[in-house]
Length: 182
Image (cartoon, rainbow, N blue to C red; front, side, top):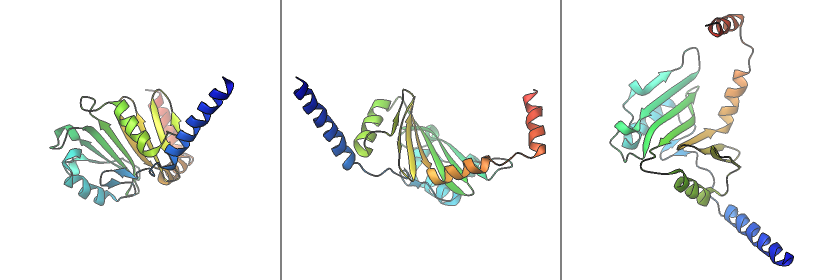
């Protein structure tokens, strides 16, 4: 019996390794929108694809006192397939570094997306009840519950983390103290 269990364990391990050997590399974006694109390139690409529901510059926000820009789209108002609900495209110094896509739960389910991603990219690097995450040197892709896909440029994300670790000025500290007192 012990020998039989070892053989099964070896077969399962070999199957998992085989799946990961044939796994595709992680995508650097969704459809024609790719991490690293400029703000202008992203706008032009979003206009061409009705699935995103992009309506032009009114969907673009500049984050005050920051080098960050955000495009928020309402895909449900778009003319596309309605598989998407809302999308966010975050830029750091005019470079797209996070794509967040909410998928319509009336048209798609978590398990179907998880199964397809696992078939294409292998087992997730991290898995929890809230999210499955695939990661390589360049991209982190996550599927989060209830139904959100995220694509993150690892290098730029790390730069933003390092940038945010800069000591706050006395004015910023005072401002934060004021806000905390509300």
